Structures are given as structure tokens and as C-alpha cells.
Length: 254
Image (cartoon, rainbow, N blue to C red; front, side):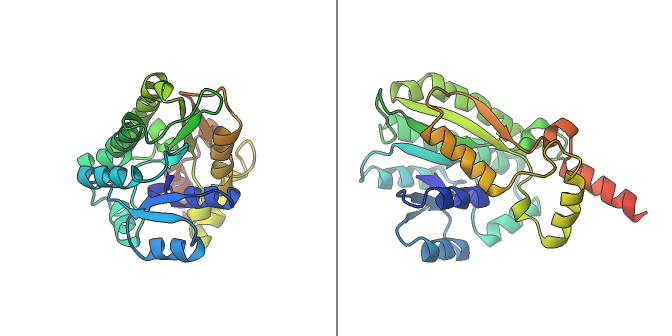
């Protein structure tokens, strides 16, 4: 199972690197959901609104009618259709909604699946839950509620890993992407790439980089739990944030 939601490019990347896996996808209905279903007809799509506890509970009930899950990939609050993404970009979500979307919904979803033994592994083959955070949590991106939610997510991951995850033989980790350059329009992306040349590996992370890390956590890093893995091309080492890019762009224009 995975929630495409806010980290949609990274979630789609997981589908690309795991072409033979069976996916249950949770997201809002909309044109993007339709496009995903058209491209991935074998995937099961279930609608859920991550701002609504009742909708999350209904989703868990739907999952309970099938076989127990072994891996929960890219669990995160988010919304996946154009209307909601536009609202998110325009800052029309309240601070409470932002925290609920990116932290509370994850706790409710993951906790519900673990408590009801719908996500479970074995001693020889642990299940996994991989939550998606954001480098925004380290500050400098001018989004306090979002940064607070993503920072809180790390605490939740560690608690789940040590308690309910351990009881269910499920490893719980967090992947923290930097700027995922794939999502930018061509013009800004070219400027970002110029600035990224000064980063340690000379580029930002791509969606496939995030997806590959999630795959490694799911399939191979069998002794890793309760951890955060930052995938940003060294962005944080030189503090190349979107705010810094805007400042550099303004300076170049002057």
C-alpha cells in the first residue's frame, strides 16, 4: 500500500521501480487519480481524504477486508488533485490543517493499521512502514506549521518503531527528501540546476532517487528501524533552499 498524496512524484517513482508489486493506492479522487488508474490498471485505488479522521477510518475498514499488508510505503499526509494542491500552494490551509495533513493523519493511519494487525510481518521477514518527511523540517523554508509537522513525524516514527511496530514485526523509518527537481517547471528548474552545481554531488535529488531509497528500506535494509534517511544531494550541507534560490535570482536580476 502507499499514499501518493503530497509526495506524488516520489510515490509514482516507487511504482516505476517495483513494476511487479501489487499496490493499494490511497489518494483523493480527481484527474490525477484517473490518470494513475489509466496507467496502472492492476493497482487498487481507494479514495481517502487525509484531512478527515472518518475518511481515514473508513479507508482502514476497506483495507481490513483483504489480506494483511506486508509493506506500507510512502505514508504521509497530503492531497493529490489539482484543486487541493493549488490551495496548498496558495497557503489557504490553516496551520491546524497543515499539521493534521502532514502529521496527525499519518499517526491515525499507521496506528490504525498496526493496532488492527492489518500491517504485519514475521520474525524472518519484517514488514515495513516508510514515512515521507521533507527537508523543510530543518527550517529556512518559511513554513512553520509544515516544518513543525514534519519534525514531529520523526518522533512518531521512532515511537512506532520501538512499540507497536516492534510488536507487529514492522520496521518503521522516515525518508526525508530535499528539493525534488522533477516537479519544477522548465524555467525555474534550469535556474535551480545552475545553483545546484555548487552542491556536493552537483545536482538536486530526483523522484527516482527517493523511490530507490524507499525500495532499499523495504527490500534490503533489514536491520534499520526508527531512522531518518536524508536524500537531498547534500542540499542541506550548503543550505540551498528555495528561499536562497529566490534571493540569488533577485540578486542576479539586479
